[in-house]
Length: 260
Image (cartoon, rainbow, N blue to C red; front, side):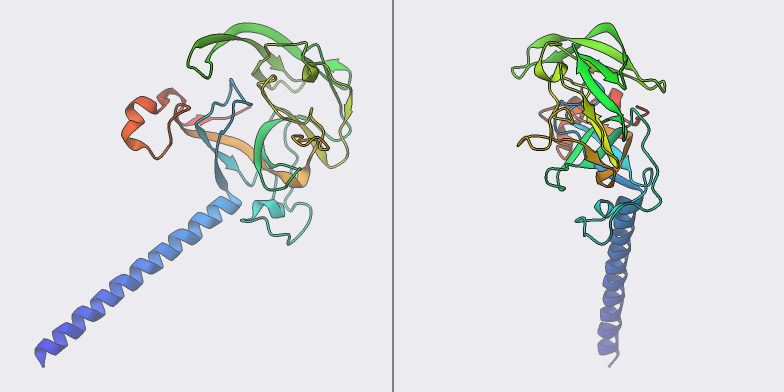
């Protein structure tokens, strides 16, 4: 009888342990979902379009609350409501993540340059906003590597917007089609975005009717600004390959606040 009672007690303890563990997992899952939906969402840089400021292999947190929330802020983007709640405009020069207007699914990251009603144009590689040239100063070349690993120097500039936001851009060819454009007029409720790597960026300079175009980005599609660069690995490495971390991690880039 005592033996049966002991087996029963051990079974009850095991059940309580499993129940507590499952409850803990559920709470952790719900907390992670809440944080990802309403506070911070992780994002990794998949392309070179934001060089030299963001590199392939950078992992960052996007601030979900900074611009307020649209239905794209929710997991799987259910079409529950239109517009934004608790909305706040981005700052000119913000590096922002958004849903690509062409499919409303793919996450892109670019710099917010033009606001509703702005007139935007590129002339000889110089950015014009409402007929005013954005200050562009030549600085030391950016040292990069090509696909074969060979070192190369890329012309680098510092752009400074009218609100004081300043950042580096790369521009090897100022005579390209995307360095000399017609004038874009940003429609109401939309924004004009550019990549910092001007010769390697698909952005608002390419209209939405183009199969690869981005066009103007609706306010509703903005997820939030990049806030913190928390991890970075070299191009060929993966974040889960922890056995390579001593050599693959860019230690100097960890835990960087992204101001612009």
